Amino acid sequence: MLDYLKTKAERDAFIDKYDNFLFDCDGVLWEGTHMFDGVPEAMELLRSKGKRVFFVTNNSTKSREAFLQKFKGFNVKATKEEVFSSAFATASYLKHVLKFPEDKKVYIIGMAGIKDELAAEGIRSCGGEEDTGLTDNDAVPDDKEVGAVVIGLDTQVNYKKYAKAFTYLTRNEGCHFIVTNEDSTYPQHGGFYPGAGSIAAPIITALGRRPDAVLGKPAPNMLEAIYAEYGLDPKKTVMIGDRLNTDIEFGLNGGLDTLCVLTGITTKDELLSPSNKVKSTYYMDSFGDFSNP
Amino acid sequence: MLDYLKTKAERDAFIDKYDNFLFDCDGVLWEGTHMFDGVPEAMELLRSKGKRVFFVTNNSTKSREAFLQKFKGFNVKATKEEVFSSAFATASYLKHVLKFPEDKKVYIIGMAGIKDELAAEGIRSCGGEEDTGLTDNDAVPDDKEVGAVVIGLDTQVNYKKYAKAFTYLTRNEGCHFIVTNEDSTYPQHGGFYPGAGSIAAPIITALGRRPDAVLGKPAPNMLEAIYAEYGLDPKKTVMIGDRLNTDIEFGLNGGLDTLCVLTGITTKDELLSPSNKVKSTYYMDSFGDFSNP
Image 1 (tube, rainbow over the protein chains, first blue to last red):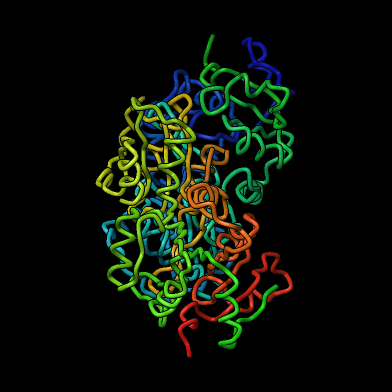
Image 2 (image 1 turned 30 degrees about the vertical axis):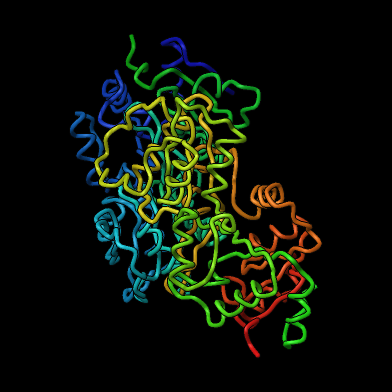
């Protein structure tokens, strides 16, 4: 455990050992609009060796289509089938697990990714990022069509959205409470901002109960979907991420080997601290180092 | 325990037993802009018998001056000295306990009450209700003058405010994290909306730690202030409220007898449920019933 991949020989042996590479994106491949050095070359190296790659991201703000545009902008190859986002997992969960009825709709606190993925599954929604301008303090009108509230990262969240979500969840019988992911923070602008788990916290506090479902890492839903779809061998699969309590725990929960990179949330001190209970199989400074000679 | 004050004789005996009556306001005297039937007459009855009354409210949205206006609008007598609000308690805590330095200021997520009470104590502040319109998604600029973040109920709260609060608390060394009160919900429009405790939850989640101080009920700060100021005898003092986990617990924590009224949050079923661990000394349907013949 906690093997440091320092030399080229160690890195080559790591690549040879696995067939399938699951990636977290933010903090591993890029931060915001900045791709880390060497990442395109390292991804190309994996593809040239016939490895399969999957992008497993808790970021619910973009649809899979929008993620592909982001990869394209960075000149990095990716296909829709390789992208598993918490927004996609949420839509899939509503459709396949909850059999969400056609006469109901979803109230969203969150951004375009959730709305777009719900629409792709034929699920109606309301709210979302554009549900702004409601700065008055009127009572929330009843809307009995709302059968689920989905909360993800929403940089336009406001009190009125919380008031609506809370009203639907307390007044609409059987209304499902779903959180895309529970990352407490979100890397941006070279720092950290409140993440989806923090955005959902007011409703958890006001209701006095946990969500009915949380889709993102470290919850096992996405891994089950990938397994089901592609029949991967866990022994030949490695999870690469920057967060111990999401990415690495997600891999560990699924019985995978894991690689923690230090380009994101986790510092070397935190990773190696005796008090850290979530230990990755390997760690390295940056995933881009795979492209080093 | 849980004596039901049903008859006039029982209500008269209750009034005769105490010299000092501490009141919660929302849900006891009024709901929003609606005063409950019989409340002005019942207050007048207490005053005519020479009783002392104090208003102990977790509502931080109004200053004590603004509370007086509210009482005046209802034609109910009250003086500034009788009002103890969580906003006043917060200002008092910053000034007297933390000795908040003059070269620092407070970032507020909250409404006018907090800002006004801080100003009354000579404490500079920024943010607050009017800190809106920040719907862009730029980085939060550093502001090293911010030495404390105070969070209370804010019906204009938005992501940018959370981003600012989190930035100051993580980047400004020694920055205090203070929550006016932790009511999870707030009665309004005949229903319930997220309260100050829910509004503060994203920052608690993002930081992964509790606030440095919580001022409102059931925390004992306000009771200590009232005791210190007026030297009340706890045996001759009763706390009247509608919430078990704030008002009644506040009274119990302070060794006071308590009266739970059923015009607010707590239902009779909840109060009398065997699973309820917070039992008031007395209960009655409405405080206004004291004015019944």
